[in-house]
Amino acid sequence: MGKHRSGTDLWLQWTQQNKETESQPIAAQEHFNLAGPFRCLRRGSTQVVARYICLRGDLLIMGPKWNVVDDFVELTGERSVRTGSMVSLSGGKDVAMRFFMQSEAQADQWVAMLSAAAKESSSPGLLANVKAL
Picture (cartoon, rainbow, N blue to C red):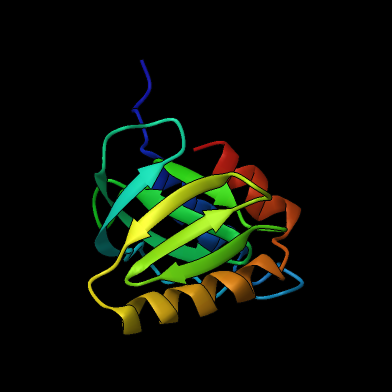
């Protein structure tokens, strides 16, 4: 039986292999260093959980630990709004996700970053690799 590789290992391998071949450079670090933890509430859930997050192109990448990725959200067309220190992410009328930040200033920073990311697009290779995680 072959060695099991984590999603993070696969991401790192892909990043290294594609670092020089991408037509548009990815601002990826040599390893994941997700920010957080932030308290997060997803649509359809009643439980607030701690999540670490980072942005790559128009992808919001999330994980339960600072170096583990287990989920992502495509941000194209999504809208982010700050209410106090809470950041709401929605794609229309429904709020898909809420992040509870430590301060209003931090919430403002994430709204600006999420709004900018929603206007970007990721390379097909990046999206396919993240979906494979």
